[in-house]
Length: 392
Ligand SMILES: *Cc1c(COP(=O)(O)O)cnc(C)c1O
Image (cartoon, rainbow, N blue to C red; front, side, top):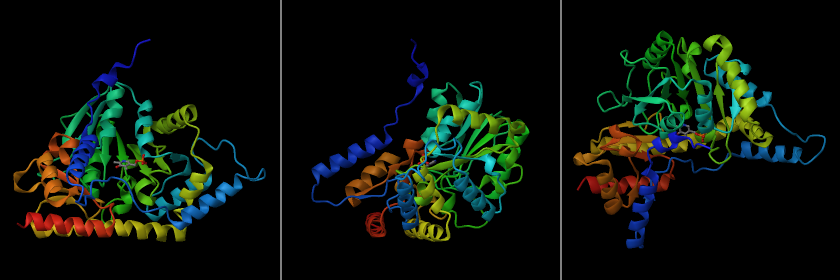
């Protein structure tokens, strides 16, 4: 037996372990101080009543022989795929039910989709980046090229025509930077991908946070995307499914003459047995009138927090991306501080925990991520403390 040597090529990601370690050390030394965590990349509001009710109903169905379900379809139940198709139609996008595949979340699909591509493909990701894109390709032994996201390009790098990319990752609105591409910018990426024969893996996990109607909530609202882009979506941030687990991936029939869509079906049929009926019933309830109104209310609460943080940065004259169409605020550390220096500074002097940008890539040095997933009360208290400290 030989082990997969690619595991040795993974770079250890100490980011959240180190954040936890420094935070716990501070708490141990200052048990009287109240810490506020604005570092969390996870939702905090519970599942909405429409989802809970649908899931309870589905559990009851499983309790009776007449309505009990065994294995479901690999690609997801038709009722959920039809609802997703309708959701796309409301965004002005036409997607076929056969192009929609339900999954247990975006992270799994982001990893699994790589089964469809040859090892000898060149992968382009941004720096800073959501680490999953890099690590999944490293494990497969693929070459990864970094597209530099910086203050100068608003953390939205554009295609480099001197590079021949095969697999391109785009996350918009972005984690960690909160930056969102305009339709015109996405069009440039789509045109580039179509010109060089690349595939775009478009991570739309945060599409529901887009409030600016001129921005794309789906890559398919950009002309030409159907022939080059796979869209990966999730109920995690949209509807609080981070624990419950459900997402979906769109593999258009127009990519490689339908071959990629067929390959994805075959891949899922081989290695995946679908998402539980109970969870899919819960996910479908998100698209009911009631469900939509309820998740909108939750998203609006996170949005208000993001706005509060963004307003605070504006008052302090701190440069940032995100906040408007994203639950993340990616700020430039004031007074020329490095990411970890600023982490320690606000932990020690304001008892606020955030995430050092350098943990997401070299270009993140000197930047810092705050998230809007805390409660309104905690968010208000945290920004009041930061504002007091930085106005000194
Ligand atoms: C949270 C998040 C996801 C969602 O992942 P799930 O596996 O569906 O929970 C996907 N992409 C990014 C960039 C994220 O931050």
